[in-house]
Image (cartoon, rainbow, N blue to C red; front, top):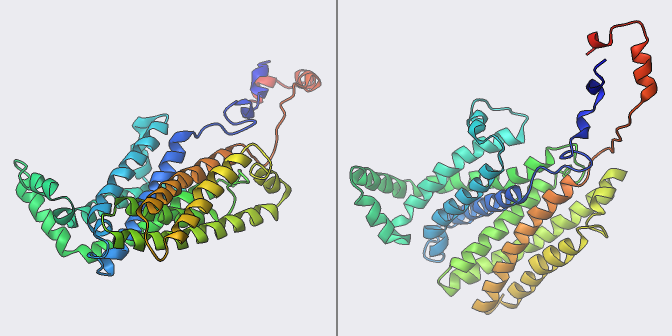
Amino acid sequence: MREEVLASVLANPRVEPHLAIWGWQIATYLFLGGLAGGMMLCSGAVILGRRDEDAPFAARRAPLVALVLLAVGLGALFLDLERKINVWRFYTVLHVTSPMSWGSWILLLVMPALAVMALGGIDAGFPPLARWLRRLPAIGALAGRVIGLSVAARRAVAAVNVALGIALCVYTGVLLSGFNARPFWHSALLGPLFLVSGMSTGAAVIVLGARTAKERHLFGRIDLGLILAEMALIGLFLIDMLNGNALQQAAVALLLGGALTGLFWVGFMALGLALPLLMEAASWRRPIALLAGTASVLVLVGGFLLRDIVVTAGQQTGWRSFHNQFNAALLDRLRHDGENPNGRF
């Protein structure tokens, strides 16, 4: 008899006792994807509100910065793929019940929408780049016409970017919550949490890129409100886990005395949320450039740590613990039950 057919697939060391498939690449992708989505929201809102003069960086330069950051995030995602040549298969079908399938199609729409919004502000935001595009041999005239059309349809494009920015931020959380076998990810709050966190990190980048005190102050105030909302969602998430079943309580214990406690409370909650909140509150009435810049850097660090902690904690917890045992008596019964054991499998 071929006894190896009785081996369980759960003997895979990358699955049991912990899932060990996703590393820094996925955390980086989730962070940069949410960051780009947050910047799309901020830039689109500024353009729709006709506040280009109040927030010139957000309206004219941030879309191109977001496009570059998203491309880097997609590069990290591509590095994580084991069979990279099969990436095209994502676009052969849409599985309506699969968050990963929805995400692949959202990304396919986000890149051109963000590129068109970037072209709409390139003349004012990056004049040398705009001149270079118009002087390109063979396609310079076409590039000029595309830039002109992007400027003419700027507000409609901004509205599309706001919608897609929300979808991109929420998707990065829903992608994880769709893995029902991982109790730490099994929460409907991950989508809203990643949305607010993406908006917060997007506002932080705009604060860092702003060249006027008015724009820096505007997005510093916005970020202060977003940090408060993020803290509230974190609190609700912890309460949701603690009031869940025993496995969810065991999962969240990683943050409440377990291996990730220090990183969560010191790295994320204290340095990534509480300290920036205090700095931005100190600049509420009178903007202080140094405090605003430091707070924004800490917000970005906190945004990455949130994704890294969630990805790590989710992979270290599961619904069941399986123990593979060799049962000699069972093999003996299979050999002598009068049937051909090779025909069973």
